[in-house]
Each structure stands twice: as structure tokens, then as C-alpha cells.
Length: 73
Image (cartoon, rainbow, N blue to C red; front, side, top):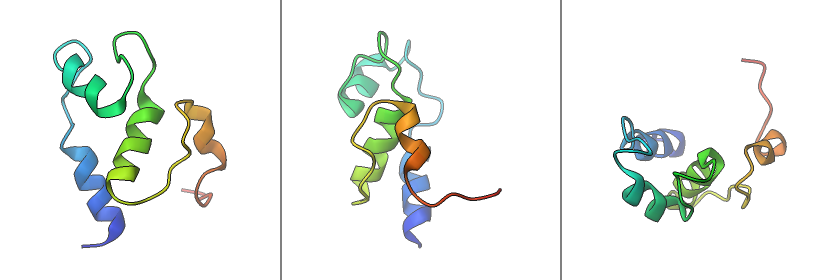
């Protein structure tokens, strides 16, 4: 399994989890109150960290604009 597949599989474990139904679990995972804070970047950074990949270290979604390698697809 490739590193990318491991990262996607880690993220897929949280499919169908919602702020309302799973707020305690998600808040503990990402380190912010998911009911009060936009948490998408925190989630991505957490999933990357769980797979030993350095993310942006920021909870701002825009922080990923300059992260990684730009693609055209």
C-alpha cells in the first residue's frame, strides 16, 4: 500500500461522521471545538500527522494553497 493510500484510508475511517452526531470524537481528534470552529484544515493536518506527513500546522484552509505539489487535475 502506498503512503497516499494509507492517508486516504485513515481519512475514510471518518466518513459519515458529523459535527452534531460525533462532536466529542471529532473535537478530540482535531483539537478544536468542531461545533464552533471551521475544522477542515485541522482534520487534514491531523490525518497527515497520523501518517507521519508534515502538514501546514495551521487550521486555516487557505494554508494548503502553498502546500504540496500543484496539479492540473
